[in-house]
Image (cartoon, rainbow, N blue to C red):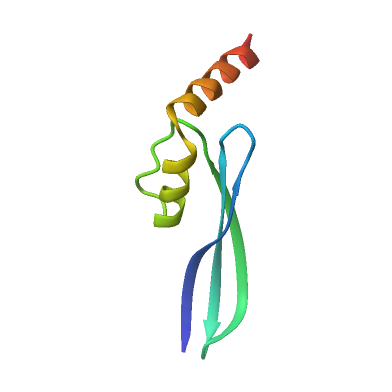
Length: 81
């Protein structure tokens, strides 16, 4: 029996407050992994993270303070100049 299993398997908080999320999609046959693939995405300070995994939401809620969001936005503006 084949089964597809998707899990958030790695979370990293970068110095600027961005949260890097790695998702693993595994294909299991009779409970044994026969293949897997990874996908990464970033949740930046100020992004809407309500659709994220519960652990990602908890980390973003703790890390994305008003001060971190303001500093991130200011750095983005400075970078564009």
